[in-house]
Image 1 (cartoon, rainbow, N blue to C red):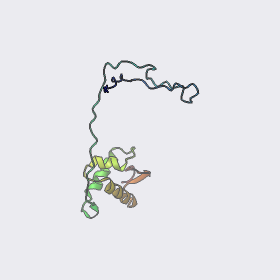
Image 2: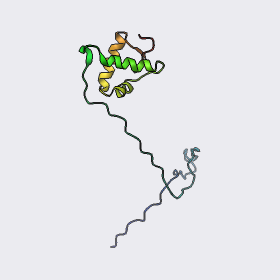
Image 3: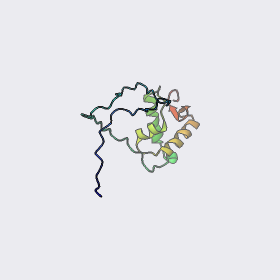
Image 4: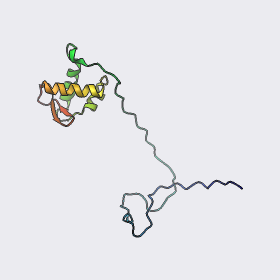
Length: 129
């Protein structure tokens, strides 16, 4: 018995179409892709920089004199007073705090009146000084 491999498939660029006339998916929406397969002549590849990773551990600065992190966060919030900042954005901006610690600190600062919570996981410094 002779084993033969199947010929390689041609590259498919356009979407598959369901051929059953009674299928509810018969008509495909016009999404800009071609209706028939085309030969691939080139591809554009964009390499994106990875997002910075948050640290695995951070210290809670509740008992640190001067509360340096809160001052840095307030400077960030005051720089763009109309923006609603999310804890992940602030933690990435600072680079030295985990997401969990950032969330706890933001909630504590809201409780003490240092910053304002504008919605679910959204904070601003507008009118807080």
